[in-house]
Length: 251
Image 1: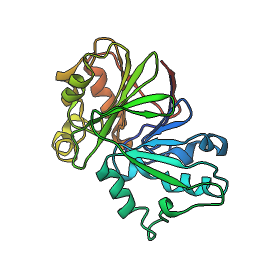
Image 2 (image 1 turned 120 degrees about the horizontal axis):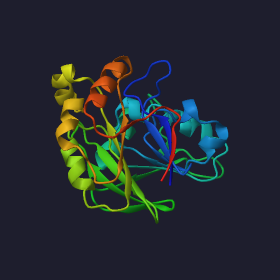
Image 3 (image 1 turned 90 degrees about the vertical axis):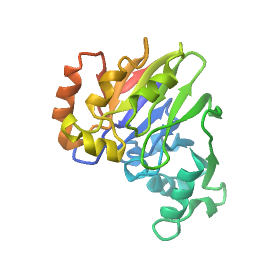
């Protein structure tokens, strides 16, 4: 399994792309940076997008992906998410006011967009992969996704303030190779982290290690607090990797 980090920032600033991951070139997890990173050929390969929740830093480039693909499209793109998330996208974004409703558009070859509601802990197929959604602790409905192929699995947490819940979900998974977890702000912003539903380093510390063998990959650090957050994470003394935009990992 190949994981390409298109964007792993908790915001948008020069050199920092919002959240978006790509698995095996064809399945995206969140859409904060798809069209700002991938060339035309790379965008054409994406047939599936798992959407953790509809906050803008996780969906910002999805309208442009659909627009870029539409004229030449021979097969639909499918978005997967909770009923609440997909409804929010339909009413708040693809509403024929902010952006066209691509679920109602069809060129001469294909419907543009299909939406598939997914439910917690009910595995579903996506391309050659199996995916299971797990609810995160966040102010709006939000999923993390366990993504599995024949040999390995990774868990990509959506936004959350509860690392312990991730540890409990991931504990008994022997094929798990990596956990992607957000840490957004430094400890001095703990109150904001609780209100906004984001991890700060002190929330993570009691939950370590999250898994006996899986690598811990840190994402979603807010750009203007990055140095401070990284200093506090390193002080925890636990093995972890701080993701960078453009990283490519193979499991």
